[in-house]
Image (cartoon, rainbow over all chains, first blue to last red; front, side, top):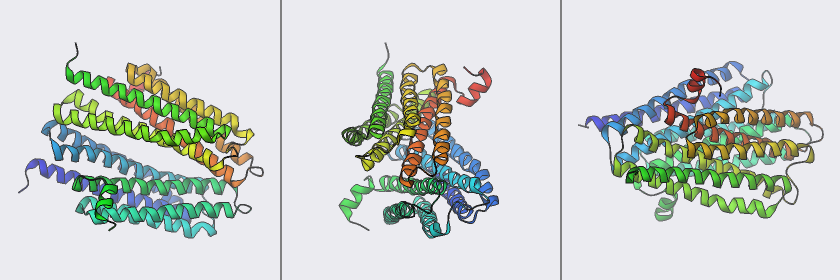
Length: 223
Length: 223
């Protein structure tokens, strides 16, 4: 049997996983809205960001109450402090999905993504949703190998980001400025989304191993 | 006389103020590098980001040690947890200055800012450095009125950001895509820099008054 304190900790872990699900869903819907110029879907992402913020506030309050009531030390203290950082990362990921939904809404009824950029944006979107799903699994399972996989997924995202940039510049004479500005920002939103997910996974690695993800990789090799 | 614990808290406050000074200096230098295409200055900002990261790590470690050793409750606990959030905001502001320096370096020996955009970027830069300086004063003085001033400074930044966007679109036929992409990103970096500074100031308002900045404004009127 787990004691009441550790049951509370488990509950906090479950809520972090639930936040990854919320922001993963937001990012998937925002991306579809962006590519298909789906106004209803964009609006649904914009409306649901409040639920992400609320989930973060509830989680932080619960964490703070545990800190105050239980006066944890060592590992448990570190876990609770780290939870506050993870929830901040996850809330920010929700904001980035929101920003993408707002670009979709601003350009409606047109798509912000011209046909020649669709493939790259679809890949960025799929990479983002894959990363956030893995991030949830990492929190639930504390699987260090899986956490380290996110480093490679993040490299994929960085490559896609560079590809988007190169494509925009190569297409110079055909792309209107507004399209270039929208896609420059959306590219950055996807990249930052992945960065925050990797940051969450790295925190799990640190909690489990006591080593930073880069130290762990250096000591134990690439997974 | 302050006891040892409260002397430690004061020291942490001093270090937060020092971080605002570091990131303010980074942003001022990055902006000059961007506008004047000054490679040496850009490199100096890029090199000095490590000092910001180090300052954050030291501060977080000290805060964490205090949490573990002193087991603070109520106000002191809230202060320490909030410190961890402020240091994260300030580190991120340092990153944003770094990003601007990198744009300057990438475009060297050209300036990333064509003459017709210089005035707007100078104003964004000045607004950013004014905001971070005030942010330092707010941490040092816990002056709620000054903290609320940052909300207006942030409105100024948002207006400048919109102006930059409008200018870029209006100049459609003259601005090369790369310039538009650089300025779109730099505009966002300045805006985010201001957002994080406002976030720090809001945390001070909350610590001092127990009310969120927006609740405080609603209850007590605009300063």
